[in-house]
Image 1 (cartoon, one colour):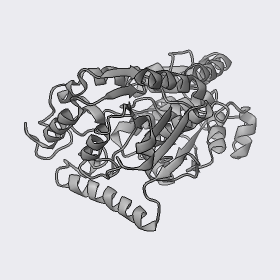
Image 2: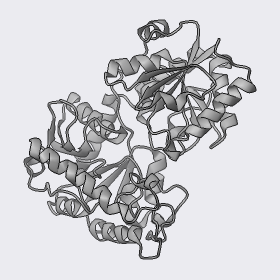
Image 3: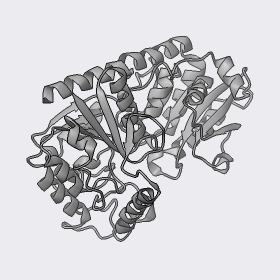
Length: 420
């Protein structure tokens, strides 16, 4: 049995990293899996790219740019430019050797100029079984990756006031929805959601009516992401062993969906109402972020920058006493999975797939949605009131039981076999 995994990137962005990890997990567990991407960032042997030379890399970049340029005519503001995809620009890979020789085509996140709706239609026409793992809501909406409070996708989209500057019953979201309806209607597609939350959302969309929808989480290498004694991990980053550290993974803090304003407010509450100060607690920030973004936070900030070495990322999680996720919309965040695997408890909002990962007061704390007060309470409880060793042990066990590579690979293998 041969599987071909399709993803825009291999190691860039949460969804692509999840697809890359699955490819590794399948191969490590005896399956013949290859990954085909638009833009290869890493050097893994089982990953191939359609951009095999300098010129084709420039063509891929041009497709990405043109894909975003097209949407610029419709976007409500620049803030939504990268969270809505119409999928008009893409490349036909149906004749690629990997596609021709595979038994199962496994789609992941394929936007930004890799696969268009026409490209997907040509893959469907090969008559090979298609598995499509959802990392957000895009597959079953009229173009948005997360619908916020909108439920138009359940019927036919249109009147898209969240993302389009000229919403109407026949706007771009309605056009994309109708195009997907035509393509998906008789397609042999099995949908995999990474969380039960996303699976339930998918089931409410008439775009996927009649399709098999199952929930399988993303995998993680628990031999790489593992606990390290905090003093040793902290020494690696020259941190004070006598303090407790709150970890925050920064991407675009301007992205409303990341909820940074709630994290900042929670820290202010922690200092004013819980009388926590820099003698006890400091912050660790890692990721693509500017140190200036964190100048006004009430605690000392240790900015580690972008960490590319996975073992060093694991050490960052182990350095922290708690990892805080303030996301307002999320599926099954890789960062939470990584933190749990490293034995570091997590505090986050009760939203999306996060409640499936955090057991309230078992391996972290689930805060009431959009409540900075609850977020602060959860951080304080984790740092100063909880049975901390139990939290750490439960965190690691959650990752081993649910997200370890062999656990997830077996679930996918059973699905693949059922389709053949």
